[in-house]
Structure formats: C-alpha cells, structure tokens
Image (cartoon, rainbow, N blue to C red; front, side, top):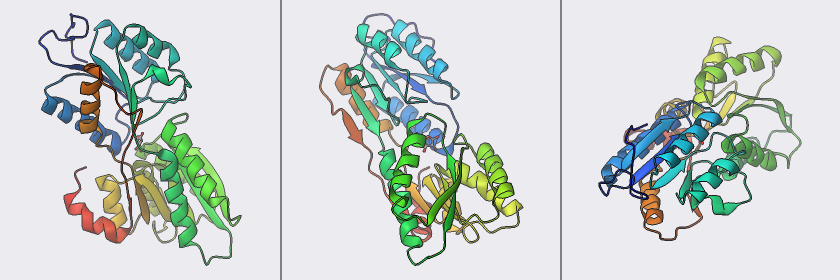
Length: 307
Ligand code: AHR
C-alpha cells in the first residue's frame, strides 16, 4: 500500500492524478502474478497513483484494505474478491462514502448490483464447460467408465465454484464419466502436488485429471511422474489459465488441453476507472475474450506468449 494520506474528496493525491485502490487476492499462482503485473503496469502507463494491497488469500485482509482505501478517500476502488460471499457491509461503506467500486476477475454473490459499477473478467462457468466438452469429444468412442479426479480452486472462490459447475453440467450427459475424487488444491502448485499424491495413493485407475488452474496441474504432474506414470498419456490432464509454464507443459504433451483465462485485465480496468471517476456510465459486465489450446496450438503461440 502507498502511504499517501490522500486529501481532497475525490481527488486522492491532490495533484489531479486519479488514485486507484486495488485489493489483490495474493500471489497464489502464475496467473495472479501476471494479473498483478498487468494492473501495475497499466496504472503507471495511465499516470494513475496505484495503492496496491496483497491480501495473502484472506478475505479479512481484503476488507481491511478496502476500509483503508475508503479512509484515504481514493477515487476508485477495485478488487478481485477472494471468495464470493460476505462483501455487502464493506461495499455499503464504500457506497456511503461515494467511492465507486469495480470488481475485477471474480464476482461476488450479492443480489445488490448497486454495490459496484462494473465487473470485468472471465466467464468461469463457460471455462468449465469448455473443459468438459473437450473430454466428451476425446472419449467419444470409449465404452468403459472414464475415472476423473478433480483439483478444485480455493473453496468459495468464484472460479472454483463455476469451473466445477460448468464441467459437471457437460459431463453429466454421459454416465461413463465418473468424478471419483474432488478436492481443493488451493490454486497452488504445492497443494496440487500433495492432493494428487493422495489421489494416486487411494485410486489405482485414474484416467483423467481436471485441475481448475495450471499451477495445480503442474504440481500434480510432479506427483504423477514420481509415481512412475506418464502425465498426458497414463493420465490425461486438462487445466485452466494458459500461463507460460502451463503452455510449456502442454507443448511437451504433459498436459492435453488448456482452457484460457486471461489475466491481462489492467488496460480495460484503467479505462473503466477513468470513466467511473468522471461520473460516466459503464457496462455492468465486461467479459474477457478467451480461447482454448491443444499441444499443437501451444507450440505455435508459445514464442509470443507474454506471461
Ligand atoms: O480468479 C482467477 C483464478 O485465480 C486463476 O485461474 C487462478 O490461477 C488464480 O489463482
């Protein structure tokens, strides 16, 4: 966090610069690191003063940061909610202080849409559906059961809830698809590896791993290799994000399919922040455009991949 006390209402730093308070989730994944970089670089490019806070994965820290932004009277508050629930009170405080709020990357589950101006980010349900559709196609000629293990993101986080739901909705059409184990790997490599080890110890017939992000998939690959199995062949792997390390593993055939989730939200966030600070109206929902990657496609785009 910057230590500028702010000052004039709506003026933040007092030198005419737009002051943006951003409360980040943490640094749990390659995706998050790229997202933070995008926001910091875009704010610098736009000439805004960025007050940046890292919540280290804790909702209470994010709430504290938002309260501190309110006290400092920043012009705009943006944040990526750690979990979906429990934001109404603090967002009401921002509303009472007439400080506009923008949600980035993750949604909240409050029915009161007046608590924020806009939500910019991916459609996580669609991402889960894309993962499921690839699986259905890949196993279309299979008549035996397909045993799936799932590494979920942080409990209560929108991408964990929605990626699980979207995937389940697609694969339920065929009873041969069986999710035999599903647990959180907290979106981190360490937990992904550890949980995959327990999956491997208790199930000897895993066909597919569906990991809610690349980092957990990369951790799981280590566990699979340590168990003497070949990732991508003995166990097919689907992940979400498409960060460089994930794309590298995909190009090597260790991951079979990645659903993209773009972390490069900075430039659009700065535009939205300027518009709301000027009292203009913005779209309530700004959707990120994304694609999917096979190993061949990963090889093609890797040299130019920014993150
Ligand atoms: O909210 C986006 C998710 O959070 C990313 O997919 C994951 O890697 C990150 O930690």
